[in-house]
Amino acid sequence: MEWRNVAPEIPAFKFPADWEVKIIPLGNLDYLPTLKDAVTRATTQFLVRVENEVWISVILDLEEVFGSYGGQPYWEVEEIGGGDESRFDLNDTDGVIQAIQEAKENYFKAKSN
Image 1 (tube, rainbow, N blue to C red):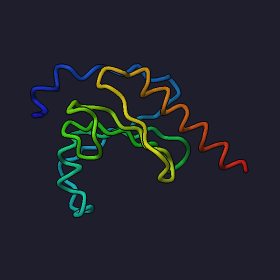
Image 2: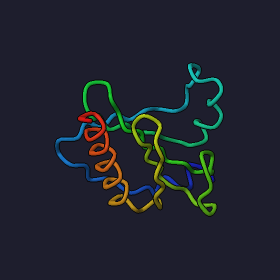
Image 3: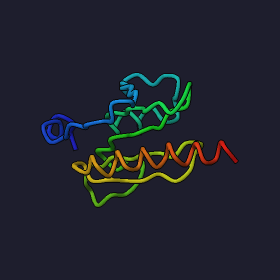
């Protein structure tokens, strides 16, 4: 699916005020040559800071590059440290935000153990 066709459908996120969010352009991934084609086709990524240099990654996958989702674009939230990822419909911003919050909580629980 071409990003130009999906762009008008991408919803706005209302992040909690204390979150730091960093947008990552995926067009130039020379530092990740094995993932370059896949990640470029995923269209966009943003990171939510947990603390210092610990980030939660959220990817918008338009072409099911990272997994199957019924042929539809979806958001993928990755657990910190390579845990399971969660996938959400394009319009499920509440689900994405909840998954980010849970990933943050899981990180701090693991850190305290």
